[in-house]
Length: 314
Image 1 (cartoon, rainbow, N blue to C red):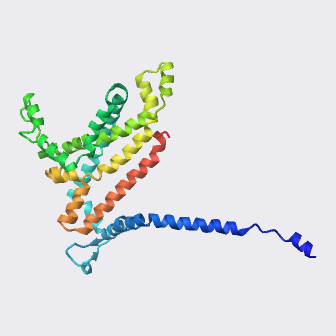
Image 2 (tube, rainbow, N blue to C red):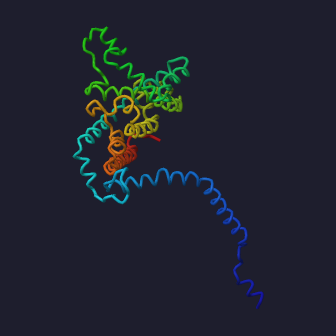
């Protein structure tokens, strides 16, 4: 009877090693959590809490100089007033136009990258030369371009007048040319970063593809269209999405060069937000602008992620 019972009783697999393994995994997870906890705490305090506070403050009427007891809930009034605010609508239009700097910079950077990668000696020198504006101080760059764009004594207008142009543009002092001037500076700054990234992408393209295309009689344009462009499409997607996000964060150039003028011709959403919050002390409308900016950037990013399936080749 005892023997039969022993035979019919299922043999239990040793549970001690399993328990030790589970305990070890828990300890490892706990240790990992302790290591990343400073970052998690920092992100929570410095990022997540301000984001939540911004969404909450976008529905209230409040000022920095008044106590929290005077905070007044206004619902969607701040958002409805934004679309009646001419300054905000102008800044939104300027930001939309400023997005044109992204494809312009990408095209110029790609052409320069192809030339430097194939037909230029001292490649390292050109990489450093083009990358220097990107790592330089924005304030220093703005001051230099402010001198270059001087209406009368600036080198640019001096050259134009020497070529016979009697009334050259006043550039950042002219409402018709101020935004174009800022866009030109932004392209000049961003070319270096895009160039370095494109050079890395070009160097990862297998040379066998070009050799096979040459055997088939493909010319330079066919190789560029059917090999280069598809192979660097992930790089282009990265530069495109990060570039568009960066255009909605332009602040330094505006603060140093134009302060949103003349006549709000260079005012961007971030600059308008800064003036509304920290100059006019209107926290509710400024928070509403921040929420609108978040929604715009998030929507553009989602559209790009969905659309990448049609033109990005991994």
